[in-house]
Length: 426
Image 1: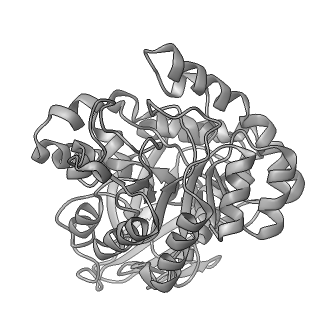
Image 2 (image 1 turned 180 degrees about the horizontal axis):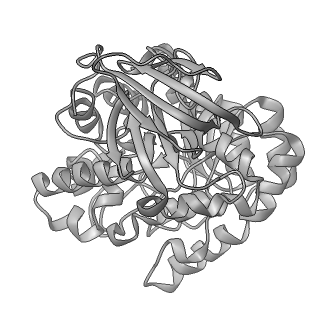
């Protein structure tokens, strides 16, 4: 893969396609799409003139969609198990992450927002063309209080506040435990220094964590407000892991801009999220997406999944800005479930609405990173003049049958990222 800008002379013409532009309700039929370098420069109902050296692909009436995006991944967590994190060599952790990044790209995900993990170095290598993978909006380490959702220390470990040492997941920058306003400020600024596009705080319990019941409130209003201020001062925003009404209320009061999960929200919480113009970054969870061997975490997972359908219904009712993601974590063998979860969104939305959410919708959330967004040179999530040339040629019509995206190996015939053909199975 060549580095951004290194293939500006490349001319790619995709002919005879039905274009879903990422915004509308239906396709534009019998279209030609012209790409020069890394950008789309034309979407035309008239034939585009060929030229010497141009690469031409005849879509033969297939549907061309924008590259998919995932608003909540853990690339490092997706690629490694808990045993890998606690006992594996650091180099293997990054090697697994880089390998999963390429697999994710070949599933059609050309952009992802990483919500916890040391992915800024991986992003840099991908952007430079050293390895293949999606565009990454990194959060760097998840920031947690002691005993919070991202505290992966063993129960017998002494907290750092009392002279203990950082946990293994802190050493590899997957998490950062910080207590009190000064430590929270330092933790936020640390992630920004390392290249975070946005900040991830954990404000409540979760299924993957050992110590925190789902009903717990984590971080005080003052601590959350300090994180929000530090992020705003850097031109970006805070996203928060939180499920419950009380946690959501605290996040909204502090100025958080993205609620991650929210599956245990009540109707009033969803209405308040919508009224505030805050993003609800949801995942269409089903119980089989995660496997927890102990009954406590399994029961938490069940409760979370039971809230999925109702929260989606309220989000539609109140017009909440809803993003889509997966949040697969610590089960590398299940990483490919990402595509199945994408198709599952069709259980709650029309195919067109689901595709919009996974393309232009998620891209609008990513733009909250402002100047920390390193992909400002083009529009993400759309097929339009001036957009990044991130596209998928689908064998079949996903607007009629969203399940096609669950099998990218078979149904995604061509994948283009930044004007470069990364897959061509025509």
